[in-house]
Image (tube, rainbow, N blue to C red; front, top):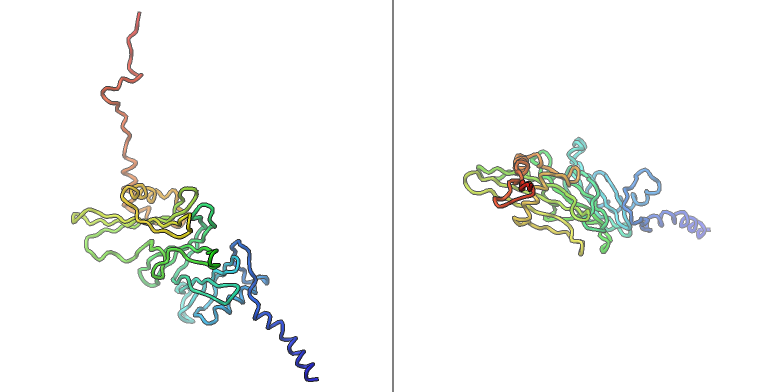
Length: 293
């Protein structure tokens, strides 16, 4: 009798044990955001929640999945009376075949933008901007998230010192008399491959000649690794014009095009007139010839 009762208890607990031990369902190769209210997605929601149980967070904001990995965004609120606008965020990579989870990025005011291709034939990547603080002069950073097929996980690009690309610095120069202008844009290049470009211009007045620093951020089509290149003078002149025109910029991922620096550059270009005066020795077809009688 006792053995029968134990068997019944074991059978009753079996579904719970299986639910706890089995890995989350693997998904397709197409990225999608999880619907927290869809019963079909509950196994992934539960799996991610269990993976995060030892971490510090207040709420799970987003879960995006592809294959056996999840891109997870959590928010953390300082206290019960704190306003939601001051929440910090953390972006995680979560494995759907193990409870392994790793932070990719931390910051504030996360904003998602369009999907872009950084290399011909490569999958699209999700772009984002965010800040580094609130109630302060916040600087703006850029990154993109992609699925690393070789390592079967999500990764963030151009991470250095825990942050993405600094596209807008809110900390002014300490040297007196320096006028600092910033311009940046995510643009579409050859074969519809996107790249990010930043331009910092420093005007020192009469003290010295102005200086420019222009960086291009893209992905190597051969290796799939991100690249950071400082442009030389010849390449930077053309890039300045592209940045200020903004005609190839991704909507929302540009700033500084309305600066005085850009307006002066565009006005100078528009005022240049082509030379139409022919050389002194030119005897074109328009010259009248002799009429024979």
